[in-house]
Amino acid sequence: IEKGTGWNISDSLKELAQLAETAGAQVVDIISQRRERPDAAFFIGRGKVHEINLLRQSKDINLIIFDDELSPAQQRNLEQALGIKVLDRTALILDIFAQRARTREGKLQVELAQLRYNLPRLGGQGLVLSRLGGGIGTRGPGETKLEVDKRRIRERIADIEAEIEQIKKHRNLHRERRQNANLPTLALVGYTNAGKSTLLNTLTNAGVLAEDKLFATLDPTTRRFKLPNGQEALLTDTVGFIQKLPHQLIAAFRATLEEVVHADLLLHIVDASYPRYEEQMGSVFEVLRELQADTKDIITVFNKIDKIENPNIIARLVREPDSVAISALTGLGIDSLLEQVQNKLRNITTDVCLVIPYSET
Ligand code: GDP
Image (cartoon, rainbow, N blue to C red; front, side, top):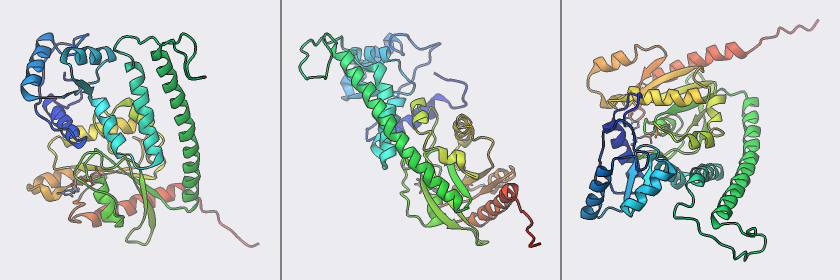
């Protein structure tokens, strides 16, 4: 179902297939349906449910992933009708983040998002009444299993929130220390796979994992690097943005994304060789708006120009203000990127530095 985002169904589905493969699934078929509005009970029409059922049997399919968020009832009804696991884009993205979180905080934040997503989806198969009251203090008298499960999840959510709060305090301390060191900070933002890790590597030789899979970057990495004029700066890589990024995740990663909010300058990396890069840019701006970081100083870095054959296209790209065309892979254009960064930082530092004349008399 198309929404007014500029993304068309086939691009969005192609991306969903790429995400599914990133998560380790093997994509057998991609199906779409055009409808006025989603079916309340099944999201898709009954005829389509039947069609998928036949396909499932003939092709030995054991998982179906929907590109839009399903209501808990729709997900249950579909699982019952099809007899196999049904996921939506949100659950898939949460799964990928769960697989790839590296730091303690990243892992906690993904778990938090998953718990919040799962809570209303609990207990679809009819209530299981449990009045055994076995474990001391584990369940109250007459509580249903569902209520116990929900209570446990809420308790776990509260525990995680408390732990994240602690980690956050630590990070704020670190940030303060960094700010005391008086180094300007740059944050790399951009759609997932745009080339952020590659650029971070090129700029800092940091050896940060870069791979051609969605979501190679989950937790922020900060590296110190030197500009040609000798000035040092800190460069932070952030989580890859993506269209329809589950709101649970934006909330969960808000703390991590604070690096973006506190940065002096944002480098927005765009994969200019991707035909629909403008839509990807739109998705990035949406997230920046949510973080209230869309009014920060931004340099748009059009990346992967080694893949663009027509020089007119590149010339058009750099006509935009505050933009530069580079190849993070070959190093093309890195010099002009660094020059622009230096200029921007010079303006920013003069904005915030107060020079107080001092005389001995
Ligand atoms: P991230 O998700 O934004 O961190 O993207 P990565 O840095 O992991 O890059 C995603 C893929 O694009 C990798 O396969 C990179 O090798 C490739 N890539 C990155 N920059 C360039 C570039 O300038 N040119 C080309 N041809 N490929 C690039």
